[in-house]
Amino acid sequence: MSLWVLRYLNEGAVLAGLPKSKIKPYRYTEGERLAKEYPKNATVQFADKFKDRRKLNDFVFNIQDVLFVSSKVKGILDQLEVPNLEFLPVTIKDHKGAVAADDYFILNPIGQQDVIDLKKSKVLMDKLLEDEIFRIKKLALLPKAGPKGPCLFRATRMPDLILIDDTVRKAFEEQGVTGYLAFKAEGWDGRDAGEAIDADEA
Image 1 (cartoon, rainbow, N blue to C red):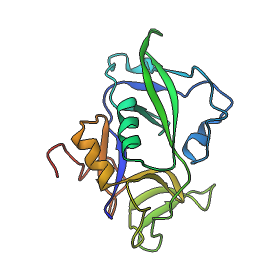
Image 2 (cartoon, helix red, strand yellow):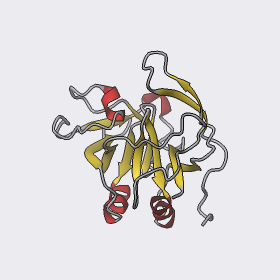
Image 3 (cartoon, one colour):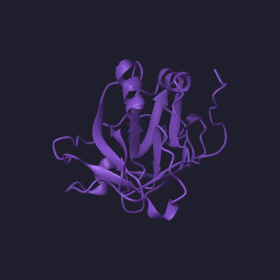
């Protein structure tokens, strides 16, 4: 199975913060279920520092590394029957507080998959959370890494690292999903540059 690192494309609207609730921000990137605690009528707003950026992509850029996605992305993943995903509805408001879109979601992959080969990867471990990876310099995957079937998941030891398989990547391409980049996971250098997928690549 060929796996890809899923990253945001830094363009279009930038979201400020997360919906107001009792959920601590870090919990959105840990892979735990949040639906029972998630607020009704949740909203987020465009960041004031980027007033000229108003375009809403299917993946919306934000500094929290939380997956904000459109109903189009949800529809693709639902059609592929990708397991262990939680979709938390959110309304997006513009810089003036007007509704820009009411069909977006926080995509929360549940759980983590053990796919990183720590012996072959080049990583910096977190000084506070000693079992977690702080930064990747070169990613190596374990043999036969990843679950079977179409998948989008978090990596064990680095739960904010999201990976997808070829089936999901190709579906995003074919249906014109915007606002994301995909990098070959094996050998990835941890940066949002290099061998990104473009619309013409098979």
